[in-house]
Length: 169
Picture 1 (spheres, one colour):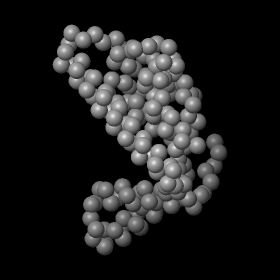
Picture 2 (picture 1 turned 120 degrees about the vertical axis):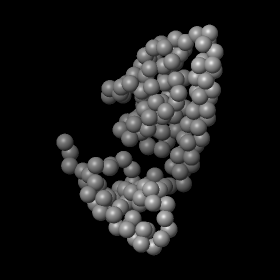
Picture 3 (picture 1 turned 90 degrees about the horizontal axis):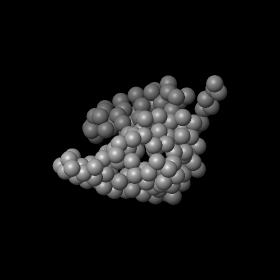
Picture 4 (picture 1 turned 120 degrees about the horizontal axis):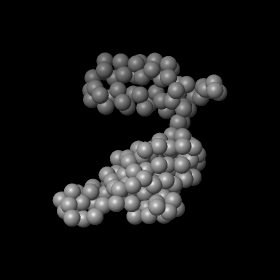
């Protein structure tokens, strides 16, 4: 295993992320709360810099922020559409379902991006990420529309993956 290298950008990103989490939990603008949050998040970031290696401050570049917001929008649209589909199937039991497991390869090379894709698939009703082996996803799908890996990839993950490729290049 390779020893993690210390990067100021990654440290600052982690520190900012830890502080945002702290602020989210406390929801307080009291000076003593903010100071405590800054100090605790600093210490936690120092202790965990070798664990959190996904991003650095370049994630805040304008073009990456644009794609992050685009990803959130695409995810919300997919979430809404899949919720309607699953609700329709629950409310109309006569509608056929065709559950099964499909597999497809991803073009993502960044481990964090793969995790985001897997979680996005799982959070979208009707699909569940079961496993990821190297670059191959295994997905349980409530209504398998195609067992062809390329078609399954297009229907389940392509919209997410195209944006993630631009964020994590």
